[in-house]
Image 1 (cartoon, rainbow, N blue to C red):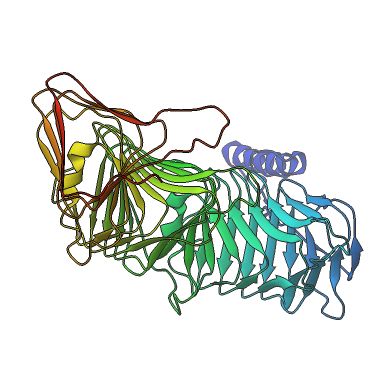
Image 2: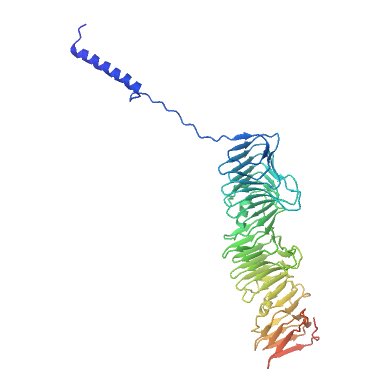
Length: 498
């Protein structure tokens, strides 16, 4: 075969290109086929541990899976931030008495056999066994019973601190207490279909977020101010039978805010607790509002609902009563500018008082049984006439500046009504204060009535002076009649000494 120079040159060029490809491939050059490895997902592998006693902090993700024996928290310990302790189905977990578990990470309990608290330290002192859910910590209890393993006088509590979160679904919580601090995390979907055979403590604003649960007992309202409108209902998707709401700390209802207890709710106010109403508090056909009235000490304490200027208490078809009988004062106090309205109710606590300047019109209180001692300016008294019955009506020292007639009050009975002057009082000139037929009037020890106008006892049942100040020195109780003023008594028995 004859090859031309041109053909020979082409063969040489082709050979050179094949050589270049082989050389580039060996060097990883531009003609090499690249292979890549797929990146695997980052996975947490939990370390399964056998049952036993645990006294050290959890510093790595851990699982309790063995159902053959209990896992026991035997000393105070911590689940560190970012660490998860997973309790599997059928597992039993126990907390020894006085042990506190700090959940700064995650405690997830899913279909466990039981989480049990020992509740008796064997001493007369009270100890606390607790699961404390710290800020950013979370406890989940799904289909799990959290219960007491022994019954004593100690406290067994799940405490959700500010920033912590408790999630519970279809669980039975039967320890002594579960509490949510102000600032803890609680959404309506967090706690559902669970039974609370325990005392719950939380801010009032959190209560409606628990409505989708089966049943409750005592729900304690702590002192976080009520700053948005709030309706407290009968709760319990299975039963509402044992639900009681109790104020356990002083609390303020902010101005322009309404807190309403719906029909059927039962409300209690702990001893020495004071509720300040700057907005509105409504008891609407509630089963009962009960005041605890004995602080177990020799001194006298006050449990109160204080209605501030611009505030209003409304009571509709509700009994306000004492839950204990002691020497304390349980009072509804209407300050200047405040308002108390009540219809078809029974007021059975120790005292209701209206300060001078409080708001009161004749339609504010109607058809009530007023067994509390009422304390108010004389001119307010006729505005109460449309109520069923009264006991003691105390007249404070606001001067009587316009004509005033006080009569037997009580649309059902007048039998127990007594009017009593408890402070010095002046009847201004040209003003007449008249007590009508059948009224019983008393003047407290050391009280002085100054009559610059007219004071008339018109067939009053009697006018009695208290004459003993319970001390060794002499005091004066008097009616002082100024010149050209008058006091008149018609067909009235002589004034007895009380």
